[in-house]
Length: 362
Image 1 (cartoon, rainbow, N blue to C red):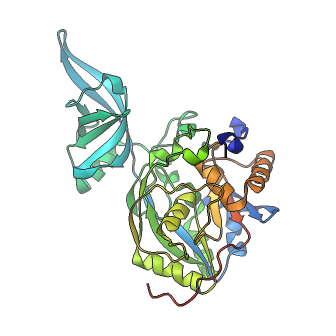
Image 2: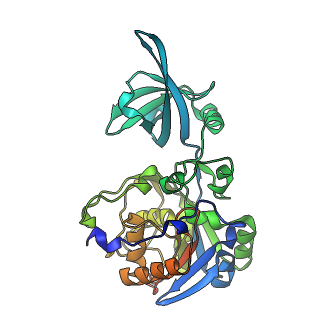
Image 3: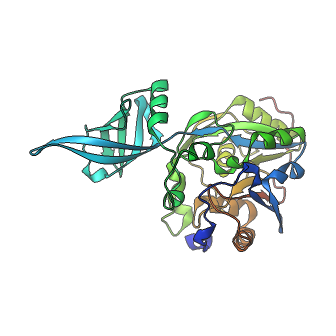
């Protein structure tokens, strides 16, 4: 299975740099078997109903981009240099792994000052990253970070424009709760309170899980044989309540539909080979590519993904490579908007997960 199998040409004009408003006005390409329909996200209540359960990732994106300065004494006096920091993931004892530019000019033990309230000491430099220890923790750190930081827009948007205040709202789901992500679960950005209420009225159930999306989600696959790719790990949690809700839906013959690849990867990590979901708390590095047998996922709502990406491999595993190629050709020819602020798809493969036998006791 070659990396080139997942490549395609995407015109730059189709890369969305702003979301549509309202959120549910985004286009929705519905793929059911070989049939494609051009709809809107607002049409979801007409496509889903009683027995369906949407699994939503309630992670909250932190303002992980920081501008700061480090000061160094030289023979000519004190010299100050600008430093750009992107937080990647928390480490033990309140430290953070981070990308720092320019990293090669940084020294361990130096202090980077981001604001009057927030500074960090460089504890370690290795493997192209730095490990930072901040001067604040807990709620004080969160408040100082909110004041000094900016939303970590994906590189394909940041290359076209700088983040601004509007991104603090646009790049966050309406149900974000658990702070820790440095990238948004972007399929969920299409939901607003009005759409959630309409879905609930139609009898659609919701389950919340947490997967803190890391910057590794944007890392390119560098091996030609994709089966040898090593996936980045991300921290997630499926509570006892969430597991019981998903299991109850499966036992009743309903459909489990994760919103976004992050929610899908997490519930597949938490499911056993028989399709029963168990409580889960910890890192997952599950890599889903064609040939994977889905344990609990019946359908998926997701945005359109980067060429040669692990996410494109995931949707190819769900729908089949040929169908995904046709779907993406249709999306490009029809002017769908791509990536984080773009439009969405609802992928409905042939039912592959039979109802789970027996009653759930989780």
